[in-house]
Length: 147
Image (spheres, helix red, strand yellow):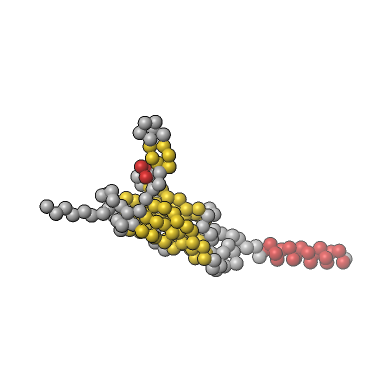
């Protein structure tokens, strides 16, 4: 009889622990989906709330910002684009018992736009299996000619 009571007690405790399972759900959100920056460029911080930033990627609308092509051989090498990821800013502020949610940011350095045309890039910020995309549009430097 004592074995039956012990078995029942162990089964009840196991059932209670199984019902209290914490599920970890990744999340990510950005304050704004797009930014328009001036032709002079400069520093830009994208505020992010997530379960931890794992990766940040820059994807340019124009391919020529991604590769430099050797005119003699046709070989391609990665180009230094007009957006540089300076750092991921981590300020730990847990908000739940599950995966902690962080108030973070992605710091970018944007080069001046002397090209005369508008340029655009997409920043993909990843947290585990989730991601958020932010578009960056940079207006061209307006030149006035005085004759």
